[in-house]
Length: 310
Image (tube, rainbow, N blue to C red; front, side, top):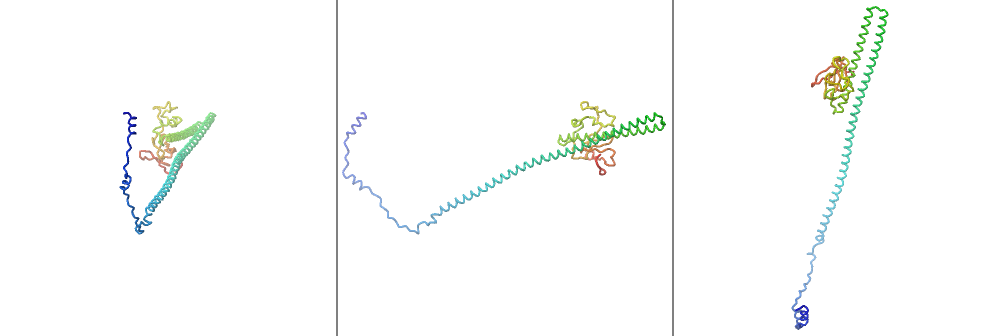
C-alpha cells in the first residue's frame, strides 16, 4: 500500500467513544496534599540581628583590612621606587664624579710632568748660555794670546815670553775643560729628560738602555762626553752601532721616578751623576755635598748637606 492509501484508511477508521463517568472517576482518584497549618514562630528561637549580620560585617572587615594593607604596600612600593630612582641618580652622579676625578688626576699628572719638562728645558737653556759665555771667553783669550804674541814679536824678553805663554795656555786649557764639563752636564740633563719622556709613554718605567729611547734623543752625540777621547761618536742613529761605545753609564734600567735618588746616569770622566728625577749633580761635589751608596743593587745618591742641584 502506498502512503496515500494508508492515510485514507486511517481517516476512515471509526472514532473511539469515551466511557461515561471516566472524567469523574479520574478526578476522584486524584489526591491533593493537605495544607499544613502555619506554626507560630517564637522570636526567642529566631536568629538575632547580630548573628544574621556577623558574616557580612566580618567579610566587610576582612575586605577593608585587605584594602588598607594593599594601600600601605602600594605606598611602600612607591616609596621604594622613588628611593631606587634616587639611588640610581646618585650612582650615576658618583660614576661621573669618579670619571671627572680620574680626568683631573691625569690632567694634574700631565701638568706636573709639563712643569718638570719646562724646568728641565730652562736648565738646558741656562747651560747653553753658560757654554756660549765660555766660548766667548775662549775667543777673548785667543785674542789676548794673539796680542801677546804680537808683543813678543816686538822684542819682549824670552823668559817673560815663556811665562806668559804658559799662563795663557793654562787658562785656555782650564776654560776648555770647564766648557767640556758644562757640556757633559748638559748631555746628562738631556738624557734624563729623554728617559722621563720615554717613561711617560711606557707606564712610567725607564727604558732598558740608551738605544731604546733613540726617538726621544735628538742625536747620538748626546751620549758622548766632550772630554772622552777613547770613543768614536756617531753622527746619527743610522750610523750608530756596536763600534760606538757610549761615554755614559745607564744605571737604572727599567726603573722609575718613584725612587728619585737612584742614579740614572753617570759620567766616568767628570764624575757627574744624573738622578732618576732628571736632576744632575757635578762630580766635584762627591764627598763634600753628596755621597753614593749601594742599596738593593742600585747606586743611591745621599746628600751630605742641604744644597741646590747643580
